[in-house]
Length: 437
Image 1 (tube, one colour):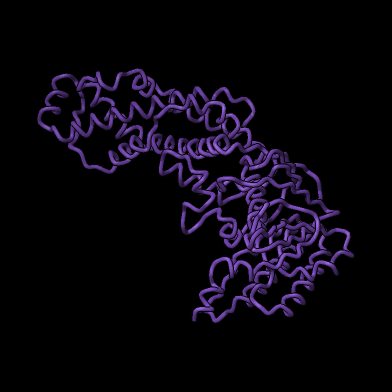
Image 2: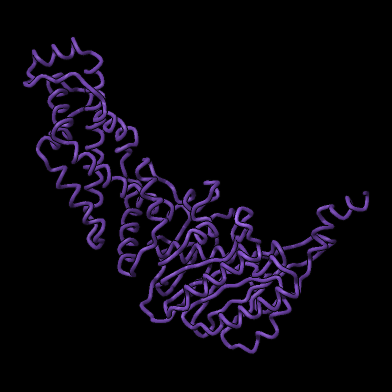
């Protein structure tokens, strides 16, 4: 699925304030390398339903073994090994028999201490990987997980490694320490780094498995249907503390959702919830919904947080126009797209915005290969659009009681007529402040 940096930013998949990002909320990794690989997974949606289903199987299997997952390998053990390969150490005895080993231990105390520390962490690392290999080798369907398990066990089956796995880290003789250190330093480096990479992948997928359990996510069902569709019940934005669930049903016969409602009523949250769910589905992740069925999408584009560019002398409205232009050029290719547009043409006057918005919407309604969710504060353009059979009208209702706004955040059928800007201005005390000037 094609997605650009603007869309990743709009949906907060990644964010300059990391704690506000989807990545942060899905990050349950234990290692730096696992964190980096998780970021790679989130930045690269999968290219086929087959690869998505295989990733679902991987994550699903890991969800069944999270309670048995060992504490090791830890980030600390991996860092100790990495540091060991970078550090200059006095040569070990060629034949580390008892006398030579004790001699080295006594006359090279600092190097021996580092060596012992490294060997102990190496044993922890290998023991943990053996336990993990046993846990994931029970997987019978996932190609990806099977491949990792087979490679992991092939390396772990080496005689010296199996001997180390069987040792008590706290009961090593000096001879054993130097024998294993020689092996680790001169015969194990390439395999060690391969094991690191394998574990980083597992750490990242385990993170997605833990996130799925933590947030109660469900795996969506993909269809090979030629035309795009999304059918979701109980869809919500998992980053909210008390999210509201929505029903989303978009298909080729009703492929345009026209969304209205007052400021703060929930339009932007709804759009982002739909976008995040579809995006997570395409990385093989569970989605925040009771159930979700959808087609594979070739691309996902958004137009949510448009800004001006002072350095280039580009206005807010100009950048809105350019984003719409680029979107139209991309989606006019016959492939399946999901397009998210929040508050179209905010950067111009009301009359211009009405004309521009109507022109764009009527043009987009011609496309049968894409699904659209578009919100607007321009309620008046809704009525003329009712002549099109493939457009759905939904709004978020807002009630007013004693000059206080009450948001239900419930999606209803129709077009909103709420005009509450002045009330919000008054409620926040701005009108009173101005009267005192």
